[in-house]
Image 1: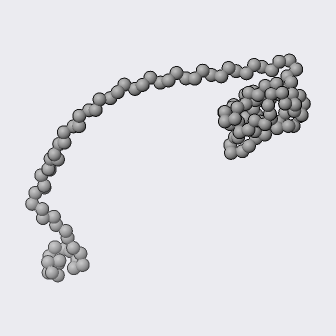
Image 2 (image 1 turned 180 degrees about the horizontal axis):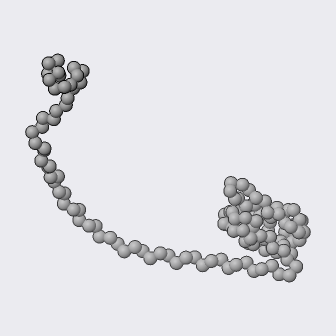
Length: 133
């Protein structure tokens, strides 16, 4: 073996790999499966008409105070009802926003005239929650 290595110019510790395959293998065609029959497709049902939007609450009358949402969120609790007397600082509505509960308090003394907040509904910044008169 050493003599062969010397004749080829290779060191005794090296080796050579020779591919002795006679010819490249012919590609084999894969069997073609029949295309499945197309199933009949029903026409999509028309989308239901959107529910009519709730009418916007009326602006507070003269002498009434609007209590608006300070930020977007979900109404978590409504802690007042129409006709209930409230004092400045009483909690009227609790909002849930960014995993926190935000208490919305009465800014003035008075009587609750209307409650627009509904538990579970989504409100945006400055949406009317309660009217105090």
